[in-house]
Amino acid sequence: MKRKMLSLLLSIACVPFGFAKVDVDAMADNVESDVIKWRHHFHEFPELSNREVNTAKYIADYLTSLGLDVQTGIAKTGVVAILDSGKPGPVVALRADMDGLPVKEQNDLAYRSTQVGEYNGNEVPVMHACGHDTHMAMLMGAAKILTDIKSELKGKVKFIFQPAEEGAPAGEVGGAEVMVKEGVLRNPDVDAIFGLHINANTDVGKVRYNSGGTMAAVDPFKIVINGKQAHGAYPWKSVDPVVTAAQMIMSIQTIVSRELKLIDDAAVVSIGSIHGGNRSNIIPSEVEMVGTIRTLNKAAREHIYESLPRKVNAIAQSMGAEAELTLPLDYSYPITYNDPELTAQMLPTIQRTAGIQNTLLSKPVTGAEDFSFFQEQVPGLYVWVGGKPLDVSEEDSPAHHTPEFYVDDSGMKLGVKLLTNFTLDYMAQH
Image (cartoon, rainbow, N blue to C red; front, top):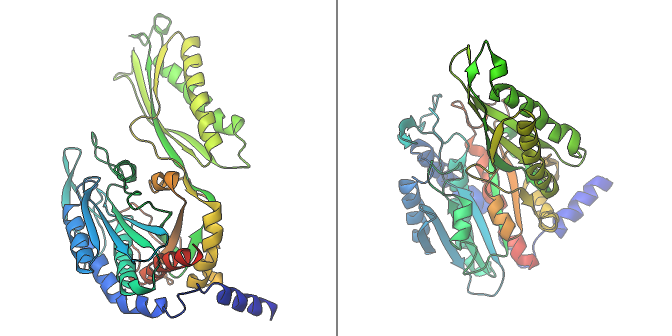
């Protein structure tokens, strides 16, 4: 009885003042068929990072039909639309990513992709293998609802459709970092930003959230070791970069295992590639390694930035070799950090929208998201929405970034409601 009373009181307390006559559930029901139609279109015709030309036009045309102020060509192919209520209030930003991946789809969906594109000079298949098709469709659904209830709003809503979340092609820049540099969070200045990600391993109808460090900062690096080449039968005539590399790899692992306080947050330093030499009987003159750093708090990230060059240079010197460390290598994402105060403010919104029993506190993950660039500038909240059919086990659900990736259409309605309610509740509280 006490638990039922608590739930009742919480649901009553969470109804935003001033929006009591807005039935978001009913409006989400009404727009669901359009959201599914949009998702199927995006899935059938995916485009790679910085190449989302047709995708952007499809979105811009629809947002224009709603009467919104639409801007295109942001960060190359991004689309931004502004809904102005005409009344004073906060500026709320909602973000969806647009790009597909160079993955060949392997399923029997009627709307499966057969598209091809060019990636780093090669022709590749293209697939929405991470759910960005659903993200765009859900944000379009929220734009429809919020436009229909414009008279109820106080402030402005900025709809951000972002290209190149998966990373720009070689030699290019893109994504959230470029959008921020081009002023997407200004004019009007954004007060808070919300984003979500469909999740193939979470049941439809459930939401996962976390406060603070939620997804890791990512910092790729490269180490080039220069030694002295010699015959493999006469190693004493060499300065062996292979043995030097082996010692570096083992020592680098102790940064996490022996120098970081892992009871606070997880961290990862991984070597993903190592190249050197071409014959069994020749000690090469050079070895190249590339790897990645993942951290969930600023202190750990700063420590690894100090420790990695210290170890690399000391080991190279001890072996008589020379080493060159490039950190970061080509891109770098900060920590996806859910503002604790904003998260606490919006938790009742999540619970009211999904149900308390379907609102799950999630552990941080060491994957990365460039939504973090927005969160560096303004308070932000990023959550996961379930896309796994209830009759499929988590073990049997295909992973993101795989040819078999699949999320169910029925998971999108909750995402539409969350984006809408985040906006309404934030406006009501500010």
